[in-house]
Image (cartoon, rainbow, N blue to C red; front, side, top):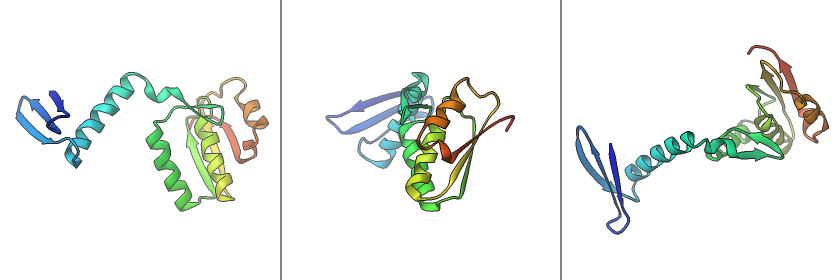
Length: 137
């Protein structure tokens, strides 16, 4: 597939084995094409690994984090169960949302907890909202 972005013409031309199509650069279809490619490039460059939340590495795309925040703030859950902790960024992220909601806690399950993570959570101001469980989810 070949994608040509023409900012002067404000169009996107997509050439594929099945034919060619042109759509407006600033329309929904153009946005979908660019978003799909942006996501592929970001994953291939490990772009998602470059973010943190309150000092803990967060392996999430920023837009995903924003969407997760919308869900948690709308539902205001009593418990959030997270599987896969790695460096703890999403655990602290969810705990901070619970704190802002004035309720809730996070149960984070990890097969093998990284050395020092339990102590880092315990020392963190939001650590009281995180229960770290070592085991197979």
